Length: 151
Ligand SMILES: [Zn+2]
Ligand SMILES: [Zn+2]
Image (cartoon, rainbow, N blue to C red; front, side, top):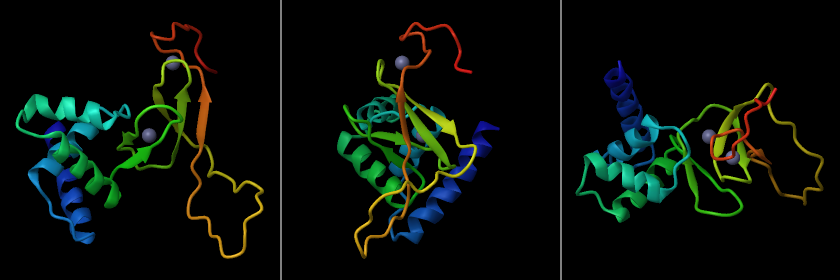
């Protein structure tokens, strides 16, 4: 089942890469699988550590290059939190990111409806392409030591 899933994602990836004129390499595929196998918004460094476990010869430069290609072809998105490194999210569904200010973890939150355009003074000629919502607060993970669940 896991293999089927990865095979399907591999085909999708190859197709997306081809659409952008990017080469489908086994490294890019591997980095994508690493991102899909644990969807907890790792940094490039963390992706590298995980990628090395099953592909010890992979280099940091290759991981950066692969992440770049995955972002460019739209199967992975970058998440920037105020402090700290750029994180990578392989969930391409509509969702908002909840950033815990205490432990730095980032969680996917399903949107119950599409984000509304905030009332802003947009200079003429400026065009909004997307709205990114980042929620900040504290979470209930074991590091943060809070037991009560968010209602
Ligand atoms: Zn996400
Ligand atoms: Zn936390």
